[in-house]
Length: 394
Image (tube, rainbow, N blue to C red; front, side):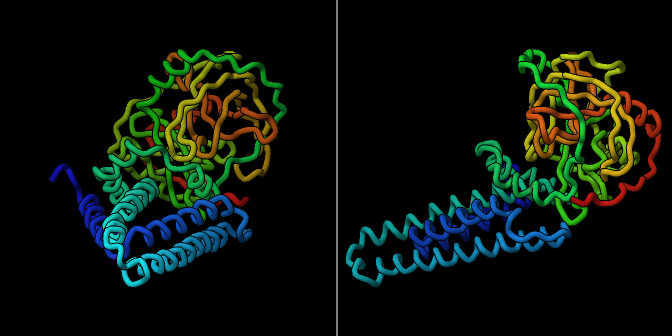
């Protein structure tokens, strides 16, 4: 019916119950509980990393998440009680004689309850659609109601992206590197758009449960059924989940290099065009498109290659020392951009973003494509699952 799947039917059933309950308790109670719950949820989301500090990431995430939800629920219940007192004053108190006001207060109760229900569907739909459960996330992403809400409403508020970033136990590895002062950021917008248009069909989002948290990242197709990303994006995970065109696929790690911070996943039944790798070193001051999923939302950002060098760096666990070819890119990258490509005007990937500067504004670091190409040649025919190493400790 209307292209609905089982998730749509459940949503319609729950929304119907919500509207009926809203009629029973009235508009004031609804407004009070909605305002109290969501206001507390947003404030708690911002305060999330400062609530309780534990060294163990799993314990920290569990305790802080529980505190946020319990606090929001408590404030919501207390707000509801206040709204109920006012509501019953219309029916049995001094205002009961005003029948029009009483009727309006009751009938309008369906509106905020419906709005709150749709907001929850929107937020939960985005959250569940990112989880590493292929069947469930595909059904949620395919639901007509969820698709309508995600198309109509703006991206999920930044507070929830911030909340996600503190759940992630695999943060970007630290890079110690002397960066030149940035020149004026004068990029060619047409080059950026041209590069992004050519590369877009090869972009994927990567999500998985690992190390006691939810780990988001980016990736791109480098050969049929093969996807490149960062090692730190999938460290400690056995089931990286690939999101592409509202569908989910389970990735099998066939290459994992903690020194290069590079990983390659094989994905069965996955068909998407491959992004060609740049065979030579990119020239300085080349304008590129920096593609990825910061905060879980696909974004195109301009970048300029400001430096190219072989530099010594530690592995993703900040241990040892290893030389690798790195581009210094003048670009703004955020949490979730890791594993995304930097793409030249002709649609070739010059490198893969793996970190950003902690000292210089709008400075990102990308592993050069020669390392990706070398790894691809080694495992192109492989179907053997490899270990994704240990969890990264903050």
